[in-house]
Length: 349
Ligand code: SF4
Image (cartoon, rainbow, N blue to C red; front, side, top):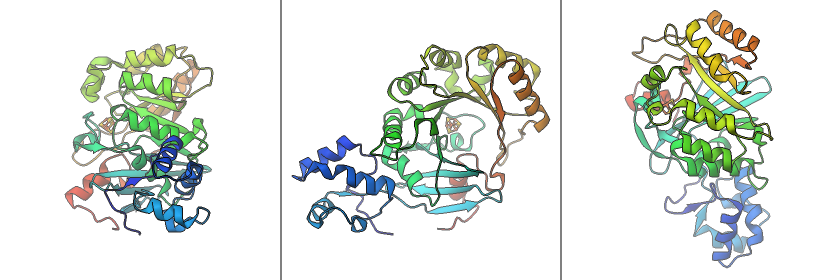
């Protein structure tokens, strides 16, 4: 791997306008901006030496001021079901994880937006390990470019709360969907949040990406125990933002409902879920729970999950049950970083 100077700015994370400003500032022709971005975002270069269609004098001038800024993973674990979890670290030493989830022709990458998280959700390994800092848009983008897989879908559902790093998340969404960026269709990019209302407002106004809200329980007093953010940003407030949005472009809004046996899988929960979502066009993803070390909670039985799905669908609410993926590599976010910190398991560094 080519070593990059930590003090230099990075192309990864730049918009077309940023790159043009950079070139102009160096007295170079701003028309090289698109080509530079192409080499970084589409070709994933780690060094300017790999560029063959920009004059050498331009590249030599750039080299003293800026680097591509893409980082390779420092470790990985492969699951028997084909999913792969990657461990990255920033130049400041902030660890974060990325998970690749192949499923037939759908090949999803789940990226982190922070190192750790300060939302403190109860059933989350990341939440238990505290917060180390925000990732930049460049570091968010770098995760999907630097893993060795073709990708069809991108979800910001790894470590961290997008609503707590919203400027960089919105910038990353623009880079992902722009023609000068990764040119991913907007319907292939999903941002998942616990529902930081002002940030959800900005996602609605400033991006065209899909949005997933984590619910856990339709009852505020129960949700608050598991997702402390409920106290500040009630789920119903954020839900109202989605309901009021003029969804002419048919963005997909989804509720993520992780099902835990005896905690949120009763008929009472199902009825309240139906009441909240009736007529909204918002779908429900029912997800199995991944227990972690020292945790006595268990995922709901598949038969219970299928009954939830069935009853939601017959009441007119789109619903699906997601498979459990990567259980042998602890694919729920934060677990690889936690293991590495505890030295319980070597990763292939
Ligand atoms: S579930 Fe998401 S928002 Fe909650 S602590 Fe974990 S990473 Fe943060």
